[in-house]
Length: 157
Image (cartoon, rainbow, N blue to C red; front, top):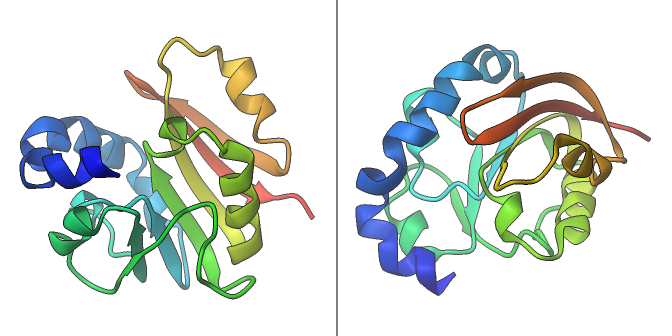
C-alpha cells in the first residue's frame, strides 16, 4: 500500500499506456457488463476513460484520492460489502501483488453475482498455474495481453 501511495501522483505516467492497451483489448467484455460493477484495485481510475464502474475500491487512499466517482478504501481480503452486492466485478493487474490470493478470490465470489473480468501479470507464471487458482470460477473467455493473462469469468456455485 505504501508503494502505491508513494507513486500515486506519477502512476499515470508510469502505467497508463500499458493499462489502457488492456482496456482496449477487453472493451467488448467491459461493454457487456450490465448492472452494478465493482472495480477492485481501481487505483487512480484509469479505466473510467473506457468504462464507468459503480464503485471503485482500492487499499491506497492516495490512489483513490485521484479517482472520480464513488470510492471505497478497503482491503480486498475483507470487502465491506454485503453478499452478492454487485452484478459484476473487474480487477485489472492487482491479484498478482497479493499473497493471500485465495482470500481475495473468496471475497470476489462472495460479493459478485454474474461476471468477473480479471487480469494478472504473467511474471513468468505458467498459464496452468494461474488457472489452478481460479477453480471456483468458470472461464467464459481467455485473452492474452503482452504482460497479462486476461479472463472473463462467471462464478461456479
